[in-house]
Length: 284
Image 1 (tube, rainbow, N blue to C red):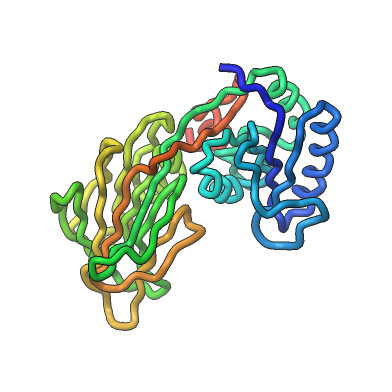
Image 2: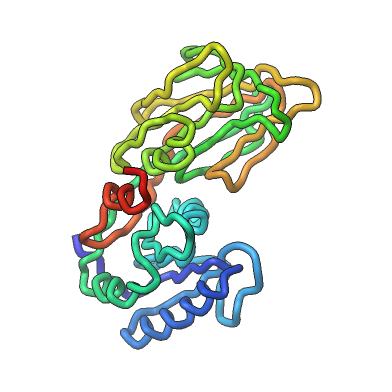
């Protein structure tokens, strides 16, 4: 399906001089082609004049200048608006950003010509229940993790799926991943790499001790619950979303993870695919 592009959010990584310079150049290029541009500053640093803090919720496309971390943050903030995102890779890996900074003019010509392809990707919602009260909630594009703190002391987690107990683990943590996140942290803890267009949840223990539990894949209508059952004195447990945001957990806290109500719309161009990205990044 062709996507008519009349307005874009141009979201750039704020602490990157390269991203800021490229954002200005791309803005001029797009405006010459009668495309309205809203510059959006992401992360730390000082935005240059004319930059907004919030994206346009009615834009036809969001161009993200940065690495995977910048794209993950943009995906969380734009999730409810369901605006397609196209990443220009200024990071180290770039699994979510298929366009190199040297190719941006050719890529944007293709975008404006209607050649852009858009995939609907599953996102996660999560909440923390403490003494039967919801104290925290959020969304994630890659994964939600419950991890031990800095000290190398195992925590005890009880794992349930739709209320049915799967087991208890003494472990470094438990990860719940989307298919998009399966080639990241999920892969490093022994989980499967899953086609990102599938609707499923991946649950993988992180370094369990003695009693183990295999990585498991569930349909996206399931709900995974992770209960912090015990941890050593002076130890900590954390909930993190996409490895970027989170909170400290207490004994008895229940983390509930399921599919988010909205999908992330991730764009790419003909000739790029998830599998070519895996090969280019040395995963395959």
